[in-house]
Length: 264
Image 1 (cartoon, one colour):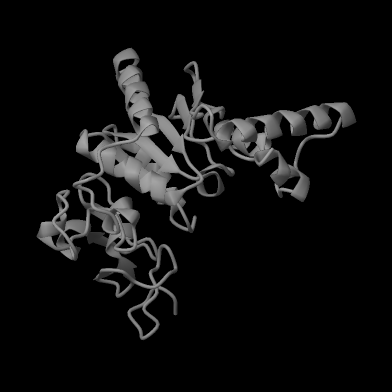
Image 2 (cartoon, helix red, strand yellow):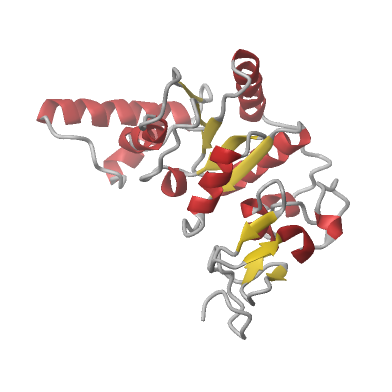
């Protein structure tokens, strides 16, 4: 059975091979990083696979409770799997990026403007979300990350709603852009343009649900003189064709003609 401590050894949250196995009292097994991402601030939770309560803190090693500095091979970071990009690069040489710094400025503006405001951060690249998460943790900004399998998304969204210290939800359009009420957030940051503007709109729709009483600010980060500008051109072209035909732009797959735009 998936998620049980058997020979299969599959995480009950992400349904992938276990990394840093944690066994709950009910015998369900999880990746440590997956379980940490679900743990409320007070450290007690229900098992994601059954209603059995257990202490997250007692299930994990004490030396994983704080973020570590990069110290060479074998060092892993809180809330990140060993396969994360953070464990494949020399973080002591990584400083930041233009987009991460721009995002930090926007978050600083958000906090100064509204002390209770929360934000969604979308990226199509999980590795980029890991780098953002790492950078925000260093700045003492509490985040929750929803990527990959969506089986545990209710618990993650619940933490985002109920934990006043959790200000940022990092996610992808696939995991966080479908059928979610995220009205607790009033800021949306798109870290790069998507190939389909319809997907972007769908990702942002989560904040426009019943219960939203604040003005919403949506920011899209685009790097000048890069392929991202060509993606914007492609979006505009598809939107124009959609308006001409009177049909919504639901096309998500790129054609050969679309790819040619990137190399003109």
